[in-house]
Length: 128
Image (cartoon, rainbow, N blue to C red; front, side):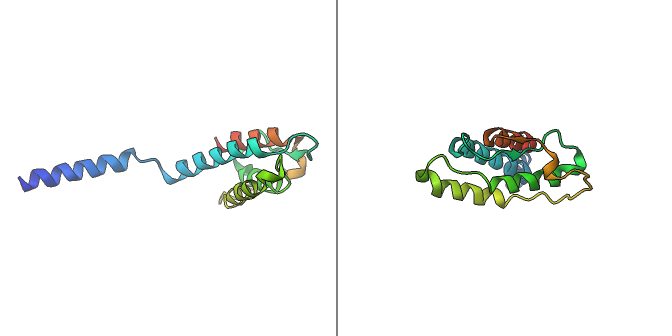
C-alpha cells in the first residue's frame, strides 16, 4: 500500500513538472503583457519618432533589443496622471536582457523611424 501511495505521489509530481511553462516562456509572456499596458499609456501624437527594428536576423537580436530599450527611454505618457504607472512599466522593461550579443552590422540608426505605437508593436513582434 505504501508503495502505491508513493508511486501515485511521484506520478502526480512529475506530471505537474512536465505541464509547467518554462521560465523563459513565462518571461516573454510577461513582457508582452507589459508592452500591451504601455501601448495604452504612451503618447502617440506630437511624439518623437523612434528607430524601430523590423525583420531582425538571428545575429542582430541583441542589437534590436538594445534599440528598443533606448527607444523606451524616449516614450512619454499620455497624461501626467499616468506618469507614476508609466515609470514603473518602463523600469520593468529596462530589466529585460538578451544575453546573446552576436555579430551584427546594423545599428539603431539604420532602422526606419516610426511612431511610438508602431514602435511598441514592433517590440511585441520581436518578443513573439
